[in-house]
Amino acid sequence: ETGVTQTPRHLVMGMTNKKSLKCEQHLGHNAMYWYKQSAKKPLELMFVYNFKEQTENNSVPSRFSPECPNSSHLFLHLHTLQPEDSALYLCASSRHRASGIRVTDTQYFGPGTRLTVL
Amino acid sequence: AQSVTQLDSHVSVSEGTPVLLRCNYSSSYSPSLFWYVQHPNKGLQLLLKYTSAATLVKGINGFEAEFKKSETSFHLTKPSAHMSDAAEYFCVVSDNNAGNMLTFGGGTRLMVKP
Image (tube, rainbow over all chains, first blue to last red; front, side, top):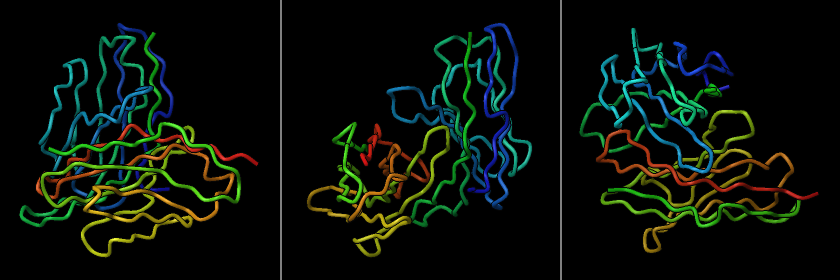
């Protein structure tokens, strides 16, 4: 395994529920990411955290709320979701390089949470 | 701006025959390029990575890819397919000036026939 774990692996929720997805990385990385993978669409970046600070929000609706309490843990809080939010939600982590170093870090992915919104 | 196109959404090969998964990219700057594999109900696993060193990159499980700047391509190959190679493969590009922002291709589903 890659050292990135996600729980739960499967989640079914109604549109009025509130739930949270959890990601944990054991790689000593400082950057963490949430991606959405829908059927027949390329992987979409949702949020990026570097050193616990959110550095990217890719026009994600406010019904998705990320939280990064420390560089090893990342949460995605869900409320009043829509059926079209059903997807595989993937977490990833990478080292964070100082600016000016022109090599992209490898991102390591967790197994994902399969979310179904009824 | 960066983008990546995987030219085939599905590829089917027989076990023991060569695999070719095609990828073309667009990047304003010197890119990093990756291939990831996703088996059913699993996350993405890194196969290999190009970061401006050798243009022929060897990865895990016998896969390799060649960076061809003149053709803006980064095709993935394997000499002999195995049944366990059946999965979805993603080509990914990142401008080295774009921090760690990755752009994913649409994926190629590889089917391996016995």
